[in-house]
Image 1 (cartoon, rainbow, N blue to C red):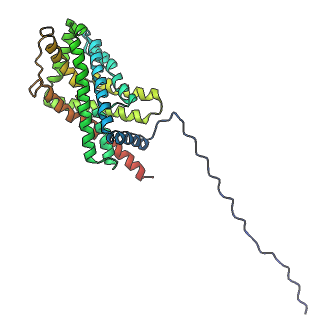
Image 2 (spheres, one colour):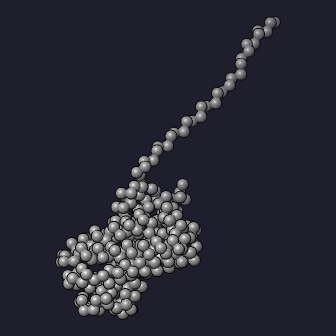
Length: 300
């Protein structure tokens, strides 16, 4: 019996599958706004940089307070003689709005923005509580000195600020601000920085200078038009009529405003508005943004 020769069958080999070519990531539009996480990181970086440079922080705060007081002077001037309440508020807001643009674009400092930015840095572990408290103290002292210094110079100058329509308007605004009741002043201060610090965070979310300035302008425009209360703006609004009267006795209408803790006291108003501004800006704006950014990173 013959055995048929077996055919040699070469072993089969499987070629490795070609590696999948990664899809190119779409290039990000240079004009596209930053994400919430990136925005929060940018706010934190600014707060940390300021907090660790106390001398620079104090000088920045002096500049910031001066700019706010300049906004108060402009808004009071342009609203003089306008008797329609809504129109008067809108004109005041348009004149006042650029004060925050100047502060943010120039790198100056405003205590209500620092409250929010500093707290979000603390919550992120980038800043300690002791540094945060020093940060706020320097910001408040610098803003207070800058605003009072500027408005004192304006009051000492007299001139156009002693004209009856202007002086009457200054007294009316200062009396209304200082005369707000405790609950009203506190709640209006919350609304103020709810507007203002949302605009500040949007400033750090934008990529273009035009968008940044638009967001920075909207915040103070909104809080002035809304009739709310801001601690540094109120320093100038309330102190201005008192200083005009002190430098030029009898030249302006009488005012019930005082420096103390009474019904129309400057210190009473500042204590209430400082607390309200902290709640509105730090607790109602900074904390929610920090939580959103943290949750988004956990979901990745």
